[in-house]
Amino acid sequence: MKKRLLLATIGSAFLTLAPAGSWAQAAPKAPLKYGKYGCTASKYRGGMVEYIPRGSFTINPDGTYFYSGFEKPSKGKFSVDKDGNLLFAGGYFDKGKAEKIDRPDKFFLVFPTIPDNRWTCGYVGK
Image 1 (cartoon, rainbow, N blue to C red):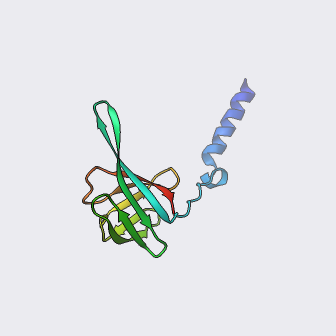
Image 2 (cartoon, helix red, strand yellow):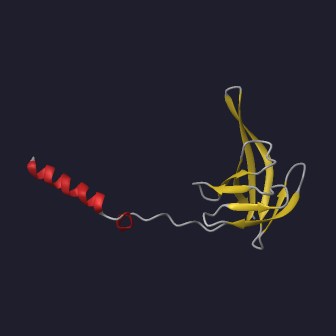
């Protein structure tokens, strides 16, 4: 019994004192995929979640985007911050941000004129 307690104490001391980088590494960031991202909004209505299509946007390697919305298609520019989030300038998404989430090629999109709280956008192809 004393041996088990001693081994458990030494093991937890090692895990506590070992630098995080020595036994765990952060997952590498996936590169941005250029192409088309489809967007949906979700609303809770009548005890159910309703998914509402909100069009799509295409991001290009030259730093431009095109939103092919249902009512108001537009063009603008985007940049990528150090965390992989998209920052929009001009067009329908002006001053908006597509925040990278924990699933590959997916973003939460918010912008000043958004008709819903936020949209979920995911890569659908080129």
